[in-house]
Length: 115
Image 1: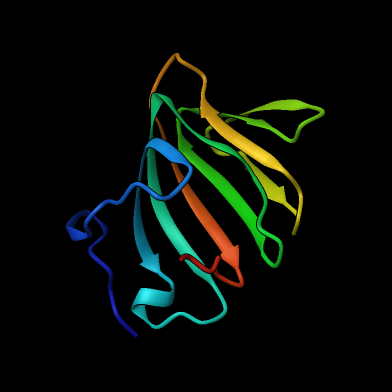
Image 2: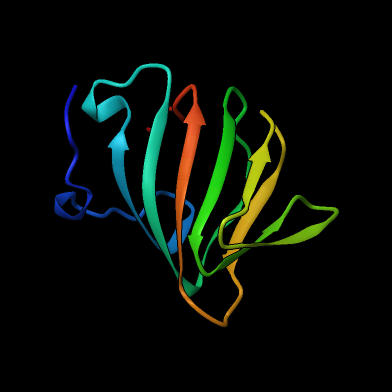
């Protein structure tokens, strides 16, 4: 067991993302093999391009603000205290709404393999 001081983690901008700063709480770099969880801050003008996670389930839980999520057919606004579940291989893009920055948890299982 360990306590993670999230504020002390170095934020990173992941591939295909812009103005989104992720701090990995648990995942491949910290010994996680089956699950990855990150605390993310997306600026109001930030986002991630349309992409898929072929082998991973992906969950967003919005802590503050709101996310705009598109699956290619529909667009959803996910407000604070709501969650969004994305199935493996489901195309999606995530952007800010332009109104405010957003804080959220991103959980993937199994973790996304990064190059």
